Image 1 (tube, rainbow, N blue to C red):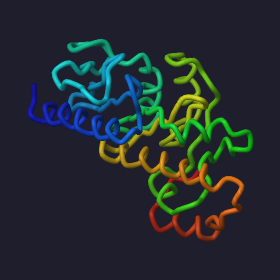
Image 2 (tube, helix red, strand yellow; image 1 turned 135 degrees about the vertical axis):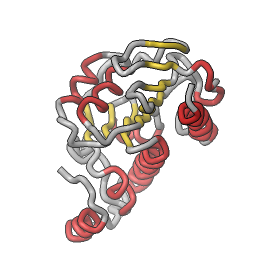
Image 3 (cartoon, helix red, strand yellow; image 1 turned 180 degrees about the vertical axis):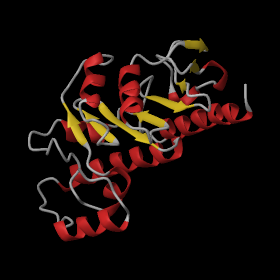
Image 4 (cartoon, rainbow, N blue to C red; image 1 turned 90 degrees about the vertical axis):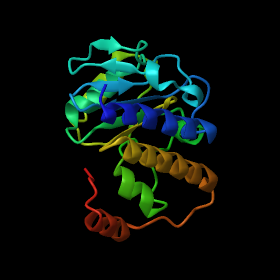
Length: 216
């Protein structure tokens, strides 16, 4: 096992525990995958708890998606595979069951094409537009089909009544982005019914241009 892979294993466990300790996911919910040097994946095992992951038992997949060692990977592999196959820039994927983002996904007036309202510049900078996808039972391959249907145009999706999924250039970027998604959803829930002053179209366009944000 390479030094790089050892560091990846440790980073997955450290960042997963940080997410768990702050209540961004709970119990045995959520999953993470990271691309390895040889084109394979390191994945959190099915039924595992982010609060007590063991680097040694992470699922190690080869470049063809076959399990080499470790425990069985998350049942949500279809959504991970879908992002990796459609976004060449994706080297890590994080899926959580964030309370506020899930709550917002249940609201009847949410924009399916642009799930998060433009309350701050940071969600735009880190996430671009977040697509709200329909509800699928956990582990359903239709989730992966829905992500593939976006043709790589989104780095983040929200699974209705379930949780967010974010792809990043590395694990740190993916974690920071999904944290921003949850915080923005929290703000949106707090502001409901209060008519907040949101960023206007010209301000959004300025952010997109200045920070080279994907916005399609």
